Image 1 (spheres, rainbow, N blue to C red):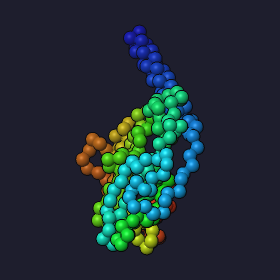
Image 2 (cartoon, rainbow, N blue to C red):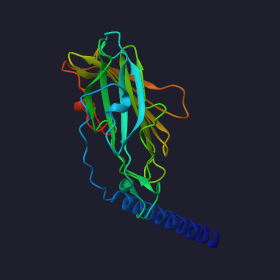
Image 3 (tube, rainbow, N blue to C red):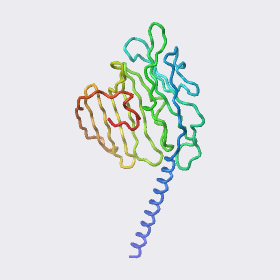
Image 4 (cartoon, one colour):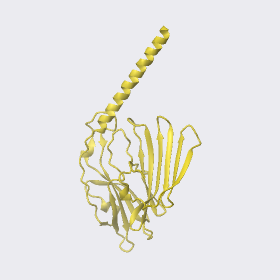
Length: 252
């Protein structure tokens, strides 16, 4: 009986410590999430330029550029990711987990078509939301400069990642595939793969907006076999790049 009492006492103490640690972790992460971000005024990009660098406003930098034919005219067009370079957007006076200094400089996704006669590029789109501004110091930068943009077969992809070092168990990768159709950049493909690091559960969603078919898969990291379910989407206009909004929170 004494041994059982001591064991129960030890278990109670362990649970108390775990609860306290979890509460401390939650509080510190919550405090980090209460950051006040400096205000940002987005510049208007030039309507035309001879090079990718010509679209970069003062105080911003060209982070990524990709080249490929996006409007089927045989000319290599441009996709640019611009990022502000303002020291005021580096935050280090906060408590809790996460990157310090925390870089909250925002990004602009821009697309420009090349004119075959003049050789100049004309701006077709500038977007501030698909690649969202960072707000959580404990989360990795969702945009990877090496793999975040890709052009293939007249379409282009934007890839975003979510991973938190503290305060969240879910990690996911979302890939958007866009194509220029009828004067706008339509979403033709959506792919999201999610893993819960606590339970090991996995889920994925793959949507082909051209065929209106969606594939949902659920499983577990310990099993090879997944459960797959197909569905046909209702007829409706495809989302556009502008209508997607925040690429991390978009729900198709």
